[in-house]
Amino acid sequence: MAEEPLPSSLFSGYPSAPGTYDELLDLGGHLRLPFRRALAPLASASPDAITRWQALAERALLNQGVTFSVYADSRGTEKIFPFCLVPRLVSAEDFSHVERGLEQRVRALGMFLDDVYGEQRILAEDPLLRELVLGAKHHLPMLRGLRPLGGVRIHVAGIDLVRGPDGVFRVLEDNLRTPSGVSYVLENRIVSKRVLPKVFEEARVHPVEHYPARLSEVLRSVSPAPHDDTYAVVLTPGHYNSAYFEHSFLARTMGLELVEPADLYVDDDRVFLRTTRGPRRVHVIYRRIDDAFLDPEAFRPDSLLGVRGLVRAYAKGNVALANALGNGVADDKAVYAFVPQMIRFYLAEEPILAQVHTFVCARDEDLRYVKDHLDRLVVKSVDEAGGYGMLMGPTASAAERDSFRRRIEAEPRRFVAQERLELSTCPTWDGAAGALVPRRVDLRPYVLTSPAGPWVLPGGLSRVALVPGSYVVNSSQGGGSKDTWVLKANTSGRNDP
Image (tube, rainbow, N blue to C red; front, side, top):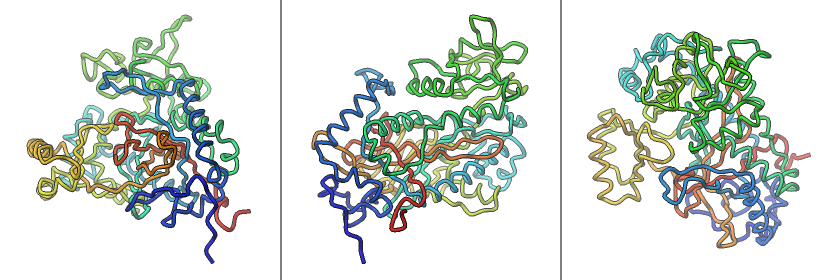
């Protein structure tokens, strides 16, 4: 016998987006079974109450200075990160699957990086992958034979997941260099608990507040010094960086010093921090500066953001860098297509998580298909981020497709393409309409890895495309965020205690 839907003034009449998987509501417009108990208090709220709560949430974020920067915006760089108070829920069963898949994926990617900068066994077996890796913008051949302290390369990973109409989580891309956004996960949770205390308590959600402590332990776990003697810092390029809020937030919550490149120097292949009490030896650097700018002695000589001699100290094993140098080769969007192959090669396992089928334009057959089907494909530059360097073929003009076709023909290695996936949607508050509307979302969970292995934060950054009809969730392209509530086991369905 079917359960009666919960009476709801909030979700009644919600206009689900045709052809999408709605994160909270089933095809009948009712809250999905795992979420009925958790969201009952919110479902019974009136639109006026949601309006008041949303205003409180936005005021709290404003007072807390939760911002990001958009360099290309002529109206100013500092923006309050848009936030929707209606949470995105993930069931315990779904997250258990995601967690196992992420752990498997990060292990395989770490082994791949060890191999690329070591024996290169997988490259010997696949000529195309070899060509892609050795020609990748972020491949650093100077690192071959150098193994980082603790054997860990991917201390922090942000793996972007999307859900298609079938409800299956798929990996969209890997972020293994300096993944950002976790500060918004933590700030969103603070606001949710403050504005919706009764709803949050009833839902029984996994906590995320312990992330800074776990990250601090990961940093100390790869130190060249004993745990209690380790001095770690967060290295930021400065307050003009788009993610500076996050740099300062993480330094503060971990109890670490936030430093800029000018605060550090290298002497006798060891790194020191300038302090008012004299030099202080630094053992671990959580760096938020890209490889190319990190050391003008080793990379770009014109960089004003680097610490001269840092790579020498790193190579001697006198300082740990998180993340390790050279990781960018593994989050190249062309190399992404080979991750299932990596999992089979290194772990002798089948991939737990699916991923989006990708046409690699460096492959002749794929190139021909992409050029002939630009009207149905999303084309991405392999080394761009933040939603830049993309062609949304189905919505692009004929002139835009022709222009992009010429770019692909000129440099096929620089591009990959994917069928446009109909992203899942989530009820999102539209303040102007005073109602819930469907908006597309993705999910970026965070994985921390120490020598003991990977750990997945039970939550993540749910980014939402706030522009009606948009598929682009990046904050730099007008996106916002939601708090992601991962429910604890045994709290849903008819077997709830």
